[in-house]
Length: 375
Ligand code: GTQ
Ligand code: FE2
Image 1 (tube, rainbow, N blue to C red):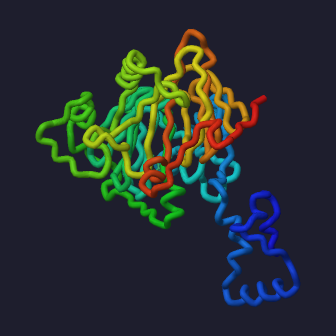
Image 2 (cartoon, rainbow, N blue to C red):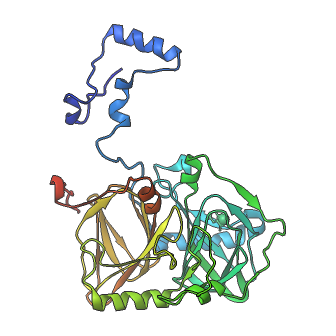
Image 3 (cartoon, protein in one colour):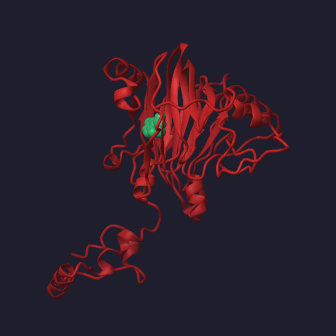
């Protein structure tokens, strides 16, 4: 059953598997099958694609549809019973692995004042982008971090973490991003429940941003020895200020506008070992050029409205919408406003791709690449 020469015309040439079918081969394949073996040429063109083939679709989850459904969960389940009260974002082609895009998981977590989740740890890394609310906090290995709208916080691989909302806070919602599907694909996941159910903060409130959050300055006696950022929270205001400052110094990227990478202040590297994150600004009227790269990216619209064209399909977005760009798909972004900037938060698996030597990037128009025209 070698239909390996069907489909891509490039597979007809020498160097690709192009064995036809006949009775002798069919009989041979049946014998190989009994021995739990197979002929490489029957699968070679599938397992060695000419270029990455995304297993995910580009998808947008609109806040206008989703927000009210997430709020409904407040009355249906408690954090005690649910563990974490999360509505996860399921890519239609990644249901079996509960992935949002590629090997990345994402969901929207909602909590009300006075609630808290139990403390736990897992081998998967986690990050959160706060979408709305007040009084939210997370405790990461005893470091208590307060969280407001549009703040970004990390919960690295193996750390104890629990979250809650102060009694005087407001119902809060945030996007979780985890590399759960990746960790499971690599069969490396662990989960543990904290012996005391809730962590006791071991350090002063916000000691992480207060110690490591000043640009260009580190504690002189710093002894941090973990493979992830000691700065766990990246607040919105300084991030937005940084984008506006950067706008005075740079024209930004042709493909992303003004884009800043959340980074480990000690090393300049990614905030965690497997996942990275960015905040980018599209200036009024800005429209970027298309490019593509390996790695999956999940965006959350932090501010403004506009659209992205992903492999020829147009996705219009507004604040708190979430959309994904699967690996190797052409994409470009546009701000719909001529007077206001638009900001996109995003997280990705680039650190994994880079460490494994798989990161590749291509500008639209290079190598004869064509992006189909959007409707
Ligand atoms: O809040 O710790 O969306 O462990 C999925 C897994 C959130 C969390 C998720 C988790 C968490
Ligand atoms: Fe967790």
